[in-house]
Structure formats: structure tokens, C-alpha cells
Image (cartoon, rainbow, N blue to C red):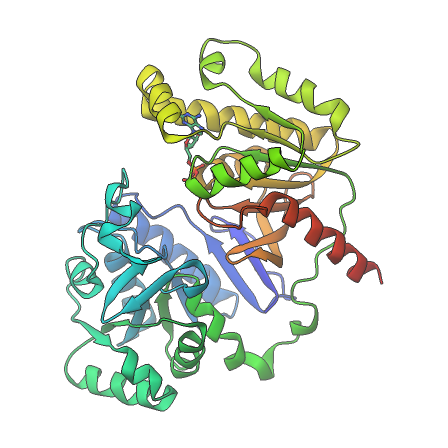
Length: 402
Ligand code: ADP
């Protein structure tokens, strides 16, 4: 499906030439009432644009607390849509998120034994999603088990009918493979609301096949020839590996020092000046990525929040300067870092292009200087992600100019 993602709820209507509209909100950890208000505003905009089915996307690790926001937002969307039943399924098998007997696994570990156990804002200490969701909602939560999925879409529909008869309004769904997600997609074609991680979206386009007018060029992006750069503020395990891999492959790399930044040294200007003579010959990487021990040390000296904000501001300003001097193909690593960069660039929307690795596509920006932008959340992507991203673009450019 040809897809446009807007940053926040836009004031303009959705352009007609897309098959799917996505509104990006920052609603995971804000107070529940704010998350509900933002989500309802997004719902109204999407409905006004003619969207037939609404998808509330949450984190594939079901990031939430006992006060929300998955439960409250789901309830509000169901009420607004007059929807009596929906599913909740964070499974994303390609990225190691699977749901079995109502329990969420991250790789080989239960959610409660994964790194999410120690998340600073949304620590996940219970892997039983039925229990986790029930604590956040007054609606009765039920379960659709893997053996139902194994019997196909019709079996899922029958199970939904039985759950509804028993007063259940939201069902956690087991899913272990992409095939499960395809079966599930077919079974939920008539639900006005689906709630899930991004994985379940895999099974939905087939339901619209007859109506998709842009499928043949869904991932086409405009060409944006120019310099290439990577900016990374993620300290996740996957990003640390990707930075090391880029250095090992001989890529020019500048490591930003948060302590120098805090001391008022001109780290931003220094990094940009370092990049300038190198841009013509190769993609450059500017990063603050560090191992956990080093991050702790910096946080102890500067404070967790202040260190984060300082580094985000610096990287956003570097990204903005790089675009100013002609970078038109930019990779950003880190969720919060991406938010800061998108804001600094004045980006209002992203046209979604080809996928680099599961969950990370190239996009074309609207608003600000038009560039190609890939926003990589911390733990996504293969070790060679940074070089792979540009190789894909080379291939894509050859295809679109053929
Ligand atoms: P991820 O997606 O991996 O969680 P984010 O960008 O969301 O990455 O979050 C990383 C946070 O850590 C940001 O606030 C960033 O500014 C901060 N940060 C980055 N590098 C350092 C560092 N060397 N020391 C302390 N904090 C850092």
C-alpha cells in the first residue's frame, strides 16, 4: 500500500494518491488523557480522509504501565468507532517478538526476562498480556490461541464470535510466524479497529487488493542525489554493533563527546567541519553511541535527562547543518534522536519507501528541505545496516531511473 506518514495530526487533508495514511504520535508515555486526546484527533483526521479501517499501532514489546496507554486509547477508539470487538497482538516474528499462550517473547526470553524488565519508563515485568492489558481497561480481555490460528481465518472468526458472546471485547492473539499474521489479517478484515505492533499490518494489504490503485509503485521514492550521512544517538546493543561494523568497514566516523558538549566546547561545529571535506567521497557517521558503562558515567556527571536532551539537541543541529551543506540521504539511529532530528529539519510528513531491514524503510520527507531519510529505532537492523541502507538506495535509484 502506498503510504504517507504524518508527524502529528496535520492541518491539511491526506493527499489522494495514497492507499494508507499513518499519523505518528508521541503518546506512549504521556498521561493517559493526553494519549486519548491525541489518538482521537488522529482518528478524526483519518476518518475524514476516508480511511476504512483504523490500526492503533503500539510497541512490539507492549510498552505500557498499569495506567496505560494501550488500554485507555483502545477503549476510546472503540467507543468513537462504535466498535464492539478488537484484537491486540504485538507479534513481530521477523524481529523476534512472538506471542504464545498469551505470553510475549522477545527473542528466546519471556518479556519479563528481557531487557524490557529494566526499561526506565515502561518496565515490563509480566509477560502475560491478558493480565497486563486487563489491568489497563474496564473492557473484558480474552485470548485467541495459536491452535485456533492453525485452523485458519474461518476458525478465528468463529472464535471471535464465541468470545463476543461471552462478553469479551479485546482479545490477545497468539502469533509465532508471518503465516500466522497473514491468517490473522484475513480474519480481521471486517473489524473497524485493529490494535497491534507493526507486524499484524503484514496481513492487511491483501484485504484491500481490489482497491489498491498504487500497489505497483507503492515503495517508489523520488530521487534525491547528494551527500550521504549517518547520525546516531542510540546506545542500544544493535546500534553499538552497527557503529563498530561501520568503523571496521573503513567508514569515516566522528565520535561526539557529551562531556565536551556540556563543557561548552564547540563540538557541533567541530563535527560539521570534520564532515565537510569527507562528504564528497563517502557516507560519514557522526555518533554519540557508547557502551552502557560509558553512558552511565556520562549520566552520573550530567544527569540522565540533561545528558539525553543535550546530545539530542547537538545531533539534531548537526543533522540540520549537514542537510544545509548538501546531505540529501540521511540515516538517523535512535527513537528519541529521530524525533529531535525530524523536528529540527521541519519535516511534516514521510512518504514510505523500500524496507532496508524489518521495520526500517527509506522515506522521502515533506516539509523543510526534501531529502531521503531512514529513521532506525535502537534495536532494529542487521550489523551492516548503515552500509546496507545506502546499497539499497543505489539499487533503488537504478530501478527508478530505468
Ligand atoms: P534508542 O532508540 O536506542 O532507545 P534513543 O535516541 O531513543 O535511542 O535514546 C537514546 C538517548 O540516549 C537519547 O536521549 C540520547 O540523546 C542519549 N544519549 C546518546 N548518547 C549518549 C551518551 N553517550 N551518553 C548519555 N546519553 C546519551
